[in-house]
Length: 172
Image (tube, rainbow, N blue to C red):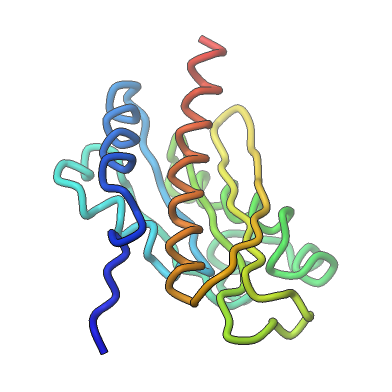
């Protein structure tokens, strides 16, 4: 079996461009990851100079970690499930506060090979951001292998971070 290379699917240019935009605005970014298990942070830090803007990340794979590290309310996890728009937003907000970042990204979803305990289908993904002013989440339905679902989730997170920057620029 060959080693997993996320850059088969994730364009380095998009990641580099995001990091340059963050640096240009003096922004710091942090990550809260469940589905991607640290892949988003790994992709960001694979680019030389990422330390100018990347402050850290939390891999909160289980609900207890989401609660204790990111402050996701237990009631939200019970009501909506860990794979939900609401939990993705709460993860991003908790991460932004924890790291005092200008932008935090969060990923949650089901990579398979089977649905989660709540019956959430494989390929169901939520990616969210939180800034000091606002938050937003998008839902995705991704087909493919576990590695492809995780990689597509990172691509979506990088794109959504770019949209967060666009939103911030339009306010200025």
